[in-house]
Length: 238
Image 1 (cartoon, one colour):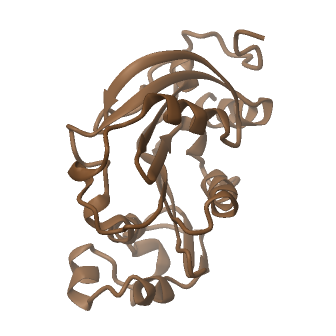
Image 2 (cartoon, rainbow, N blue to C red):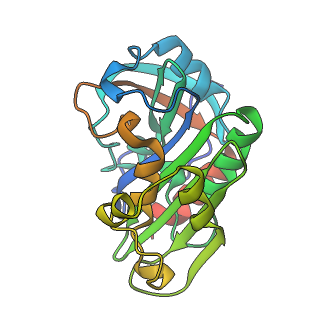
């Protein structure tokens, strides 16, 4: 099979909503490397990472390099077959529209669980924000010592689902109070008012690659699994 035949929507059908953050990263020690000092992206390793990923059956086309700051395209249905991925030394990252959700499931947590099993010594960090009339976010941090938190829901609204222990994550990362405050993470606030993506950023620290224009990823056109396509059609089209 050379094309993605699971879609029922036409390739030029307009997508509903948009993504901002949509990343999942597995990062192995050392954890204090400045992102700009990480090795250059290895497109072949990035491709292998994509091909091994939950919800992706095959890479159909290498679309070439992209800046880490380049958002995933999301204008038409055909854009939803595009993912960005990178292998920067001990850091593997992927951005895919299949991570977005409106609260009916938890695709980021499912993918993070798979990475946790594959890379037990890695920091697993995921941050997703989908805007479809209202904003829905899903964030996860999972550390090698087992400390983790997962937060999914509608900021400033309910319901909001929390699991794990963000305090244990903060303690394991040896974060100071001012660092947490500066990231906008107030654990005394209701869960739906906490900026959980800020805690994900602290887990990556100076190694966070997604804020640097000079950090290079590779774009791939892929065939998502039938289940992933079904979920995306339910989310991106009315």
